[in-house]
Image 1 (cartoon, rainbow, N blue to C red):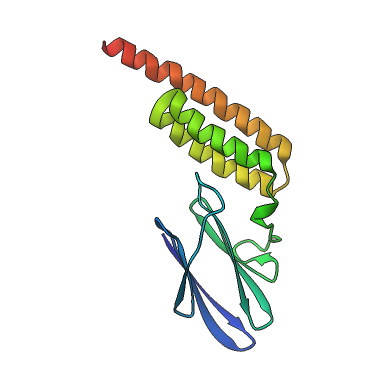
Image 2 (cartoon, rainbow, N blue to C red):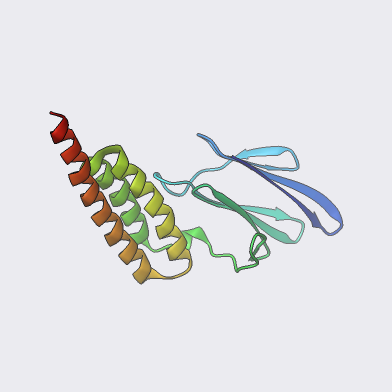
Length: 158
């Protein structure tokens, strides 16, 4: 995925580019910088850029990249929420959902864990901690159902 934003700061045009991949990169006016995800299981990038007196942040959660300028997301006008303020239990839920899902029901459980993990982050950024816990319980129940469905299919094949 590649996302490009053209912004104007104090009358000067700037191009900011985000490139996903094994090592994600952010480019400001052609100068490339490697960025690091804040989580092992899903992409979570919050990269600050200071252009003159304007604070610009490239924020990526999963496959969605957005640009925040002076505390406002450009895509929807909502207030910027720092990714480092996500509660610790959200990161624990992400690890449990991804690894636990894989060991419980294989690749389908892993995929469910990754998809729900993106939801955990979005809910945590909206400060809906109860919804994060409910989503984790739902993900765990789905992975248990997948265990029986996939296990039953494998048993039927033998």
